[in-house]
Amino acid sequence: MNDTPQPLTALAGIRREFPGTDKWVYFETSARGLVPAGARDAVMRYLDDRILEGGAPATMLDRLESVRAKFAQMIGAAADEVAIVKNVSEGINAIVTSLKWQRGDNAVLCADIEHPNSIYALYNMRDRHGVDVRTVPPTADFATPIETIAKTIDANTRMVIASTVTYTTGARTDLDALARLCRERDIVLLVDGAQSVGALELDMRKTPIDAMTVGASKYLCGPYGFGFLYVRRERAERMQPGSLARYGIDLGDAHEGEKGGAQYRLMRGARRFDLGSYNYAGANALEVSLDLIAGVGVPTIEQHVLSLARAFTAGLLELKLPVMSGKVDRHFSHIVLVGKPAPGAADEAQFQAIYDHLAANRVKLSIRHGRLRFAFHFYNTLEEVEKVLSLLRGKQPI
Ligand SMILES: Cc1ncc(COP(=O)(O)O)c(C=O)c1O
Image 1 (cartoon, rainbow, N blue to C red):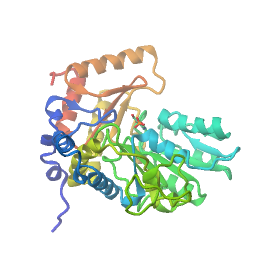
Image 2: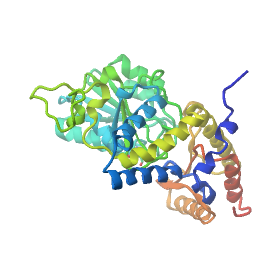
Image 3: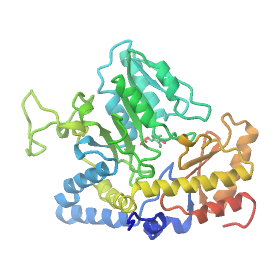
């Protein structure tokens, strides 16, 4: 008997956990995900504990460690390969500043499609340490250009930064190929997972990337101010963090207020990147959505969101709308972009009018760089895709 859950069965009931889905056709997870109602109860329990008891391990450090372990499991990593950070920028900067850069070293990224947070982290290294920041153009379908990166790296390349899926064009990066390329040359591959972790599979046992960071607020359906930084153990153990605090130091079970001597031992693996006190309220909220995602399973979520994106893309093409995303299969993702690479004023006005029409009919989506961005997660349905297509055809309001 095949006991693999089928998507519809596995997803049944998920929308009930997200009351926001009753109110909106919510295609805006690329900006921020919906939060499940259970997160409110979890945060209330945490606050009650703080109000009445001052705070017990069960709602504080134990909860934090539970969330770390659950996230690690989601990405096929060990718990000590996961540090707790505040957001993607903090994760990116933790890795970028931990390299001992020398003048003349270089780092490579595709600035056109990467988030400004990654770009400025490298410019900072340029201005502080003389790092040569090499930016490469995207592929013709606006994805991370692995072949061009291969031609651009040389003996002085220390780091490559890429996103799992780009926030501007919705293109999925061929991370297996990029990871192989970097690994063969001992180049640190730092990945921004903001636009897919929680919706698309990423298994560190299969894809040998060195470091990946993600915030909780998008596809993990959690709070702002909470994120994760994965660092492969072998790589982390060769790293001296650019910022160091008590939680990054190994003093066994000693209380956090204890001091060691002037010589210290760093925590194992990625834990050396943990800094001070944690966002415990956030950990309590996030555990609820991590459990919901794990309950369905990321492979099932991936299958579901890709099938929604395929159906939506086909409908948009029938309407002769300019779909920028999904032109090459291996770059296809759950994010659909409608717009032009360099929109003129007339294009921007047309897309703004479509945006306004959808927003007036209770559809949430984003506009980025004059393009419409539709993003799917496990609480979205094919019926919603059809409703939005029918709105675009100028039919019945939802
Ligand atoms: C690709 C990408 N990276 C990073 C971020 C955000 O970074 P941070 O979590 O530091 O605010 C976003 C979106 O807000 C994003 O789309």
